[in-house]
Image (cartoon, rainbow, N blue to C red; front, top):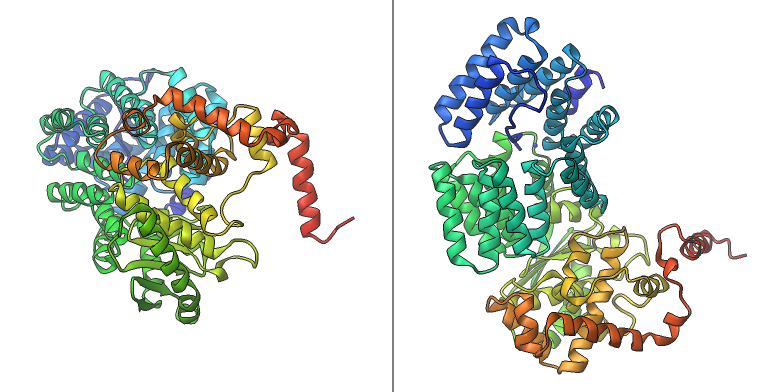
Length: 595
């Protein structure tokens, strides 16, 4: 793409992480000087870092047309150090990287830094194209593979993990790839694996604040306060104001639905750096999740004023402008927030259903969450998606932040496309299971219980058995209970996540049938008390994780013995003959071609 259009694409972003000289790159005095500036920036000596970066940038503006490609890359890195609060510096950095590529088309470091910047500033199509261009020139380039893994991760593509593994295979010492792997493990609540990956990153880069942050997050989320204290002390040795250490903890906590911890850590980050757009955004986002709309808006407006490229913040602020026009209706234990032309009608139908669900769930779990529970209903799915993850394209129908729920209104989708009553019941069930466990229940258990509660409420609600599910069972393509979280956070094929919802609900159904009505509640309490899955199963169920896995497999195959004999394992494979024919038939039926 021409330079002009690339700069225009960066119209409306996250500071690119400083990196050292690429292997094989010609040494230069300016590259060494900017590396010194980057190290000063990372250890908190901002005055020295910015002075050095400004000197390089000024020299480049005066004589840059005569600089080598390597020196132009150094100029781009200098501009990135100056980019906080400066959209102009971001564009200058991209221009310098592109100028380096124009001067030497073989210098892949320039292309990769430009791609990283485009991705960090949410120009995902151009970033993806740039990484692919590098891979055409160097098919096993670890940084390009990592970039594509990040692109895939942002879109929820299961290929993200495969690309990440390829990156690490190409260069096991690539610290940024190990950090991404640590985050993947952390989201799956595999704390030991997350810590191991972060320590491998430290072996390559002993000054990595992110690595210590991920070690600290893993320790905190697993209840290891002594290991957390070690990580925290290490962060303060690296820099006197480790704002990003606490920002990483805030993000990790929020991904585990520990929103209270997320707010607290984000505020610690902000106290150390009041201009950190990452910290401001985290405080604002978590305030919105708690239902404090005005406080959330204030922080996000401040963040966006500093960094006008951040698409998450821009989208959310645009959404909050629309939310101001919504009508709020208080009905006892529930607060309904919906478009004004629909609010009264929606409240008429949804509140009685929620009251029924509240009473049933409070009786079953012997727990009463704080009220009022806020339910936001959106007539545009894109608005709901932004409310949930800051970007459009989310495939879910609803989300629970605990006492705050959000979902598509019936008008957001075509008639018959989804059951809004079932969705509302599902999300309210999360309010109970997350509340009782103090947001410590693993994803598989909370989601499995919500799907099970849908089926309890109405026999036609919730996920049901399908040929594709049974074929996945036959083919061994679903996770055992002890590993079921992976089915949600790092799926191996496109349909594994949706199949895992039903799979998890059957685990919950079996647990209740074989271990008694109190087993599920007792598990939630055990997670609340800080136990992890390997301890919860023996404590509550009196079985090891391996024993439970075998027991569930036996139960599952007995429950579906007859249909399992009629289904082939290959029927679940994307593109398999059975699935392809069934989907084609459904499409023809939907189009009215019954013959």
